[in-house]
Image (cartoon, rainbow, N blue to C red; front, side, top):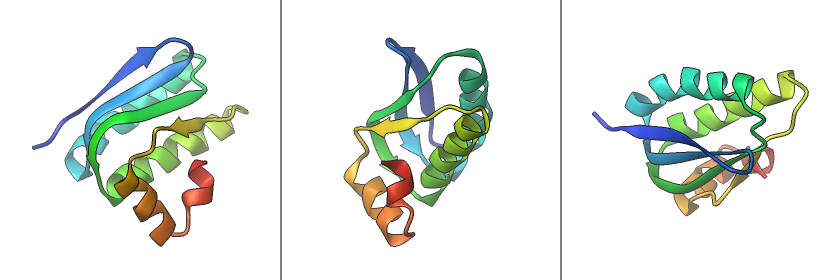
Amino acid sequence: MTSATLSFQAPNTLQISGELDFDSTLGLQTMGRDWLNKQPIVQIDLAAVSKSNSAGLALLLEWQREAKRQGRGLVFINIPANLQAAAEVYGVYGLLT
C-alpha cells in the first residue's frame, strides 16, 4: 500500500507528498475537500509527488471541481512530468494549468 500526505503551506498552498495512486487517493479525496472547505487554498504544490497515475489525475480534477463549485480558482504548481504527460494523453492538461 502506498501513501501520500497533505500539508498546509503558507501562503494558501496545500502540498501533496508521496505517491498518487488508487490506494492513496481514496483517503486524500476527502482530506483535500475538507482542506478546501476550511482554508483559503488557492494553489496545490505537487513538487513532492514521487509518482502518479490516472487516479492522481482524477483526484486533482475533483479538487478543482470542488474549488470551482465554491466560486474559487485553484492552481496546480510544480506538476511532475509523468502527471503532465498523463493529462496530455487524456486531453485535460489545459484544465490543470
